Amino acid sequence: MITRTPIAVHCEEVEPEAPVSDTPLGDWQRQLRDVIRDPAALCRHLGLDFEWSSGARRGHDLFPVRVPLAYLSRIRRGDPNDPLLRQVLPLGAEGDAVRGFVDDPLEERDHTPKPGLIHKYPGRALLIASPTCAINCRYCFRRHFPYADNAPSMREWERTLDYLREDDSIREAILSGGDPLASPDRRLAALVERLEAIPHLKRLRIHTRLPVVIPDRVDDALLEWLGGSRLQKVMVLHINHAQEIDEAVVAACARLKAAGVTLLNQSVLLRGINDDVDTLAALSERLFEAGILPYYLHVLDPVSGAAHFDVPDDEARDLVDALRQRLAGFLIPRLVREVPGERSKTPL
Ligand SMILES: *Cc1c(COP(=O)(O)O)cnc(C)c1O
Ligand code: SF4
Image 1 (cartoon, protein in one colour):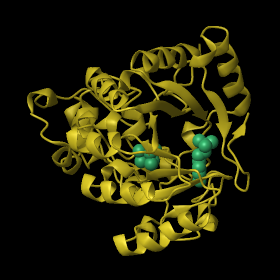
Image 2 (cartoon, protein in one colour; image 1 turned 135 degrees about the horizontal axis):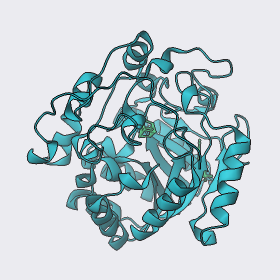
Image 3 (cartoon, helix red, strand yellow; image 1 turned 180 degrees about the vertical axis):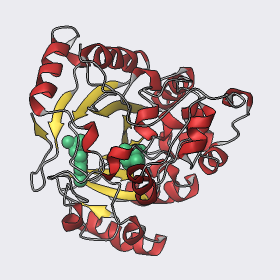
């Protein structure tokens, strides 16, 4: 077992605010709007005290705090080391400049042939279907991505889609972001309708964290355009810790599966959050209970501001080896890194 690194914020017990669970959550659009955007308020909700440091200030200015209430309700009160809290709370360490940690670690800016499209790997192309996310994860490799330049209008989409129409080696369209499911269903349905009209496209993949952080996102309107599509449907969720999967998430996953969606999960290996074998084993078990197969375990992309989450490669390999001693083969995620210029994710 690896001991958890102590948190670097000053969090003390303070008088808790009214529990969040007393507040009705409302529909998903409202929940998306009513996210917590202030680290001090976030800590207050959890009975913790927050003190600004220059690093946290810089981190928050560059990549502001965003936490949906449905996610907040799964964070343990009074615990500054809670593994969900640590994913969303900016720390002083975000201000540290660390050699090798840069703004665009994946060099994605070199692979955007059309606005909103990233084509790096053969056979599949990634569409930035929404510039925003419901939650801002502090370790995110896109924390400095120039979304404003990559948020095409519906008319611009047509030119982006021409790229897919003209390349019949592309079999799979991946909706990514930001979080694609932060877009309204109207817009997504129109986009998917256009994708369906491209004969060589076989699969629609959606990379999203929304069914996890706001399970109410999986509503009838979403299931209608998604379930009705002729394309084979794969959803790659993003869950890093078993505690993120509550009963509402399990129910959302059941609805997606009933609509014919294959559910996979990708995680990021994060110091102090899931960097021990018990936590990773519990995550795989819980994912499968919810009908989700572990797909990737990513080592951290070296994005500036996230170096404190880094787990060295040797340790990452040992962790996955230990996991293999414990779990069925299909519960072992592939440990990978994204190397700029490679034509696939690189196994470690
Ligand atoms: C990760 C990624 C994909 C998907 O890769 P898979 O190995 O098929 O999951 C596609 N395009 C880009 C740009 C990616 O970063
Ligand atoms: S949901 Fe995904 S894209 Fe959005 S901030 Fe988190 S890791 Fe980044």
